[in-house]
Length: 324
Ligand code: COA
Image (cartoon, rainbow, N blue to C red; front, side, top):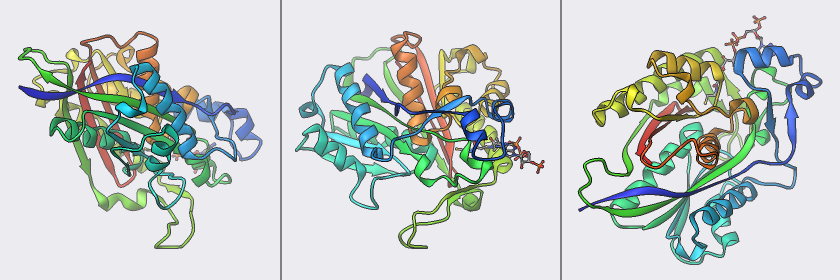
């Protein structure tokens, strides 16, 4: 018997405030035309001043629990991916745990910036496959608006706030030749690229929160290469080709990166779930937000081959391949 993890529920939360490209063009020297043409982004959501990352995460978690038909008492573990925690410590996951009324189990954060959700999913899957947890809330939640330099047009137009969550559950595989659940995870990092994408602050280095700094074109180049290569790695590990993919749910950074990755793999653009036009880059939240949308609107169906993949600061990158 092999233990596997299947997704039994998903949820999302987006702040109400929509910020359009036109609105940003009043703050910095940019235009709706430039942003749309270079990134595919039309608008993004920005959290209210009194909303923290945990508030977004709690809403997404409650939505995911409702969709799974389970309560917080049924959850053994919360793994929350974020690069914008409420506080330096404790983990934002523990705030979510308290708000859900969950007093047992464990809760912690994972930090891999935009690859955070894939890292969190991999951690949760390992807990389940080892029998250390049976039902796990995996959350990606961010308030990147708090770490943007709103005077830097090369970065402030690219990001948004939001949260997505899934409930992952263990099942005993019954010898099915085509089992459901997470079939493989693939994680990578290469810390030599720190200076391409980082925040110039932190409790230990500068004692400030800091702002996001990025060499956009350099990140772009690595993103297409790394996302295509890790996707190829996931397919090879499962004896599959791009033709086997029903849905690709990539990290949503830039429409041109998504088009470039699909082109490299000769994958039909119709199979790629896109939300970057409405959400912009919500870092660790972008994959669960896109996933939740495609599950809720019925695109993703049971037994579909779904591949999630991401690339982010560090650099970090990774993929998870699931038979839904
Ligand atoms: N509005 C108008 N002009 C802008 C602008 C904006 N918001 N941002 C940059 N520009 C200007 C630049 O200053 C530059 O002007 P110049 O030619 O006079 O020097 C010009 O546009 C081209 O800049 P460049 O950076 O070469 O553009 P690009 O086509 O590479 O697009 C990004 C920039 C950031 C959209 C693109 O590089 C990108 O998406 N990179 C990856 C970012 C990413 O995904 N990060 C997160 C990864 S998890």
